[in-house]
Image (cartoon, rainbow over all chains, first blue to last red; front, top):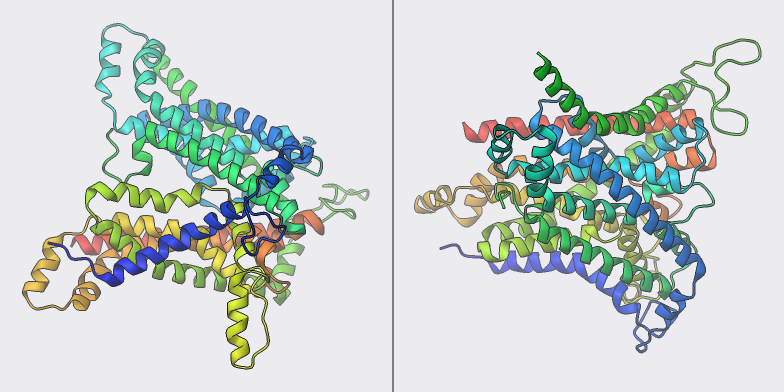
Length: 262
Length: 298
């Protein structure tokens, strides 16, 4: 019989409160009928209405959406290939290139891509941001896909090969359908990472292009306004939905190691 | 023969495209940054021409000399390391009990409790910083409470926002999940029989923790420390938004060099110094973790 001390419980409750109260405050004040984010005055949807007519914000959201879709599509294709390659072949260079972008501080990738694009005369804008996002999303997709493959029965692919299927047919009709939940989970993750990215976008977007996080940044640098709370609430809702979908498709993503077989 | 060649071709078709993409958009930019660190800045920012009018090649170590001789930059590095160390320690104190509780929970709740730790990490980074702008704001309840208490003791009001305190609390907030997960992953594998045996032999709860659980969990602690310390060292958005004028960390310095001063060579030197620090720390953490797990198995 394991006993749990009340101290432990209190410390854990404190930690969970520390994690969630700040986000809750952002959400609650987005419905607050006051310019100041200081105390509750009354319920309103004004900040959401204001948001819907803020053309700058809408442009930023549109840019984020386009970049997110392009980046998640390309990085899912490349990441799936990388995941399959790392599972089946003994590779040296690819795993380093997959894990390094995730391990090093984000700012390093941001500034090195900035120099790279400027020296190659690539105009900073939607294209450079999308190229950068693809680069940091590939690794996450590859890791999810490889985890899925590790929990899969590879003899099925071998059986298809023995029955005369070409490697590409065996992949298309046997392996791919089996790893599909992992691929879709990876795509959702990539989309979320792209939509949320601030640091790398900050360095690769140039002066004229604005994404949602960049727009939020320039707003909060000037002042605290409930409009930021409203857009934050919507963005959190979107992320939450995407992550729940990814978790449903690939439960191993949110489990401790050793349970990755489903 | 043809079959083997075909298989090798097939393998290349799968691993080639992602490899090429990452070589072009990750490895090449990193290499260019290393080269840029040995060049001179141009008059209006960026890089000076590689070969100047006199036909002299522009390659030097001026930016490195500047980094090692002007103490102000070292001081920023030390300050960043200090903030990152405080963040790591605070995260450890918060995460350890939480990880213990999750590891001791029944399997039914474990995934949910773990998901609740990870979920905030998936909300936008800026939103999590913004939340602290509200909480620590001058008109918010917390600032009124703190300054009210200070007034009782005759001390003047202090601003909570735009301070080192704001930077630290947000650093802890953002990195906490990275400390909880590895410690939990380690604690979950512990053998309850060891603790039962110790209890039968008369060890108190504190002795059982300090002599058995904690030493065994060190690999998880070190992994968590690396996962918190390294990103915290290179952070720029948090001090940029929540910090005061004295809270310039390495990340802010790098941002300044690239976007404001536009001294790319010196910005590159700072970035390389940060990379080296991150790699050395990651290497040490991996080495300690391997030694630790080897020792606990023996």
